[in-house]
View 1 (cartoon, helix red, strand yellow):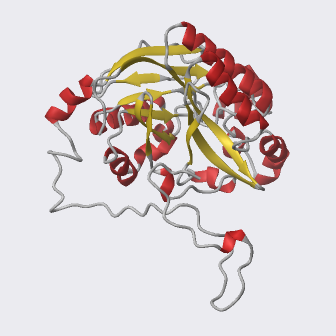
View 2 (cartoon, rainbow, N blue to C red):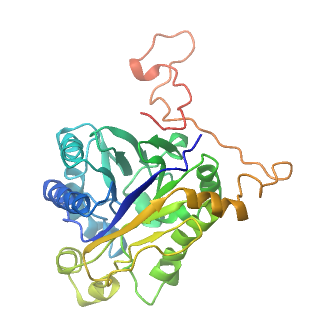
View 3 (cartoon, helix red, strand yellow):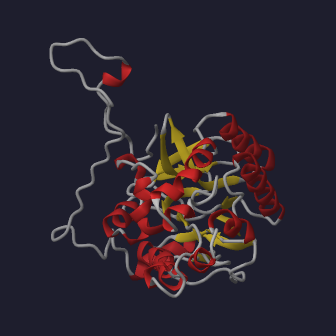
Length: 341
């Protein structure tokens, strides 16, 4: 059962990634984690695909133009358990802080929009993949699976993570809420694309999604957010029109309490830094007293959610009566809610 007696300090990062440079991106992650620890934080959260940065080229031009970015993006994506990954684990242990971060995961030749939670001992407690990449992201990234909709036990309580517009998926949210989530990482890439043209991509709408998640699920929400600086425009915007489509700024990191209250003063949209808030899980009990959509405020006699928790399926399945085709042909059991791989 969840422990509602825990108190600690949490941090959410607002900063520009180091575009297409995993090693320098990890340098920056470690520097921010150390700074957060110096300021009393026990956990620090980083934006969506912080390493190697969000692929804004997907939104700006033709597939032919985008091709120049594909190889550097793939080679700077992270392999779980690889040398770069181990470096982050060691840093978490040396600093003594839990690190929740977004990354582009590379498995063999495919990429996925990953999230991870590494605890203060340097142990990777959870990794996941965005269940359904959004819009043009689907031309670049593969999908997650049922094991990815998971809340995990950590030394800081029950923690869950979702990326960006996964916060607009009501069934996904309900499945998370039903797992007694206490601290949620709502990772965002920046609100810089198509400013004034597509309201659904605006900071107002998407910060509203993070806040609604907090008050609807009665969870604390860390909403780290990247931003667009001159380095991003130099890399992605080779025309004046593209500079207008991918504007400078866009950083709107937030921290919300389980009643939807804002717990940290925002930074300017073009300012790099860290937001801090003190977390006291006892406040979740007060919020749930008013409305608990998966508890006393639910009606399971009227509505239920069918949730398939299956993990990744085998790439090759043998035909009955034939020899197995390697280990991937083995039966894959349902993954646990923790989404262990």
